[in-house]
Structures are given as C-alpha cells and as structure tokens.
Image (cartoon, rainbow, N blue to C red; front, side):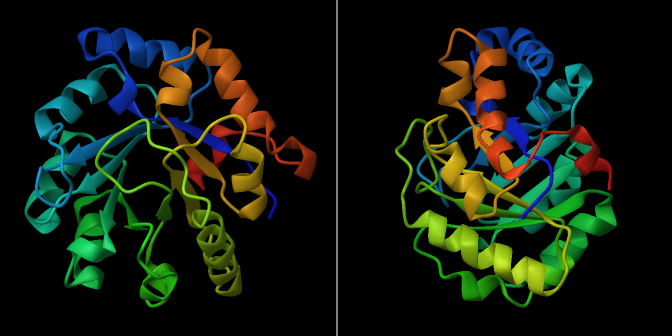
Length: 233
C-alpha cells in the first residue's frame, strides 16, 4: 500500500475540562481528524457523549470529525450526529442488523459512512458492504475504555481488509483504533492501515507534535507521507 498516513487523536483521552484547548493543541500539532467515541453503556460498558458535545466540538474544530458510534440503536441517532457536525460516522457490524440500510442512511444525511468490527468478529462479515463505505475501522482492543493494550491478531485483520479493499479498487480509508503507540505504528501501517487513532499515546505525552510526527513517520520507510488531502478525495 502507498498513500498518506493520517493521524486521528481520540478525544476520549483528552482533558475534558480543557477540551477546546486540547483540540486546538492537537490541531496545531498536525492532527488530520478528531476521533470521537460515542458509547451508550449498553453495547459497550461505558457511557460517554452525545450530539450536543459533538456540536460544541464542531464549533471549535478545524479538522473533520470522525464519530465512532458504539451504540445499539445507531439508526435512531445518525441524523442527530450528522446535524451536530459529524463528517464521518462509523457504525458496528455487530450492532446493526440491517447494515446496508444504516450505511445508506449515513450517506443520505450528508456524512461519509464507516463500518467497524470488534476484535473477535471475522472480517468476512464486511465483505458485502466494503463497496459502499468510505472508511473501515478495525478495533484492536475490545471497545469501551481507552488505554488498553493492542491485540496483535488485529494485524491479520488489517492485512485481510487491505487485500479486500484493493481487490475492489476501493479508496476507503482503513483505520485502526486501540493501543496504537509509536512503537507499533510501523507494523500497523505495513499491514495496510492509513489512519491511526491514538488517544493516550498523544494526550498522555508532553509533546503532542512530536508524538504525532513520530506516529506519522512510522510509515516513511514505505514512502508514505502524511497529508490531509486524502480526506477530500
């Protein structure tokens, strides 16, 4: 794979007391997107934010909002999250019984559509929807909490999805979320990912710009250089 490596800081790890400042800081540091985890306390064992917070983030953010819905009733809330400012909306195959309909709903609302799978979910469940999405997210931890360790078997999923996307000549972004650090970024990029979601790796560091640059530089041996232009293809 060749192409840009994009970095999406996950605000789940940010200081919410200073959220606007944190957003501005990672944008200055080179963030390409902001990854926003929405959890309902039902599909995953945690409760985070809803459309009003996304709307507030949109008012200060200069980069696209990558909204990841970890909720059981995504169809009900998709219009609200898009209206609040989501540029990408990603839903779980495990939580959407009528996945094609849900993906079309995201697009009809005016956002780019993404689909994701949990670590124990086979990639074959994505085969029939890949041609319809703008983004594929591979979870490399069990969703619900930040700061978890990367599950190595996720690399095989990234390789498999990259092959599937290339086979149909899809230009969808391939994103990895969970335990992404500077020391494993090269492996993830080599497997075929071109978007890295990083929460604690960035927000727990003292140098946001240095960490983002190091994550992006992990793709340089393969001739991959980060760029926001991929978001506007």
